[in-house]
Image (cartoon, rainbow, N blue to C red):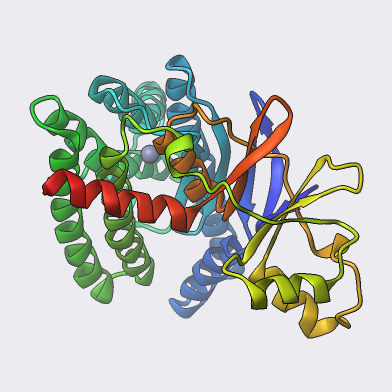
Length: 365
Ligand SMILES: [Zn+2]
């Protein structure tokens, strides 16, 4: 078992790693606590936990629905991570064609529709008589499947609410974008999504603390995605070459912490590309990494163990918007630009944002 980004890797499906975040344990603890507080015995609590686990199997299948639909349009999924408030499929990019976005967004809830229909049909034809009132009773072996079908219906209803950037909000944006500019469509979807988030938070105060978390996630997520769409719209026809920095300093894995300190103090740069002694690309070193290293080690130590190893590089003709999205989503502060095996420049997030600022000012002038 591998642990990355505070998550435990459970396995892979079609080479997509399926991960579970450590905080998932909180939801299990919460369920057990609520059960025992309400006077349930351990068996009932166990059924409730089993139910939560099966719910998250459905969430995983839901996320795989998004991933498989995205794959049809050539968009790969980096990972699927399960959090206490739901699953997240990290797509390499969001398809920009409204119809493609619509299909990818709808594919997730559709998986839950299929699960609910399959189990519903089975229950319908089973000799045991089920009543919808049983959904209000505690979960046990007799009504487990009924609850299971019920929760899939709930997942569908919850997900198709137009709370951008959740599925329903994406479907809503896609419909809007069919008739208007994508930036405007996203802005409207953001406002509606944030309005829904406020309602969720108010509801959550009375019903369930997890709803408040979901509300925060929606509120911030909507704003962040709008900003991204708006920013990239200004640099649509620009390439990496437009925003790259041609004067830059590289360091080597055998440079000392002290050398880096001097470079930062004496110049304007604070993130550096790191090379192996044979001049091959090793990765990057940031001011934050340096400070962390200095807090525990002497300044005469070499930087090698503290380097963030990465062989990510761009070429000059790459669309600037793509570079920006990759650096944002993978959280890489600086990337070398390589032409014919040589590093000809570097690009960092600040530079891209500065470039966007200029492009925005010039367009509105
Ligand atoms: Zn979804």
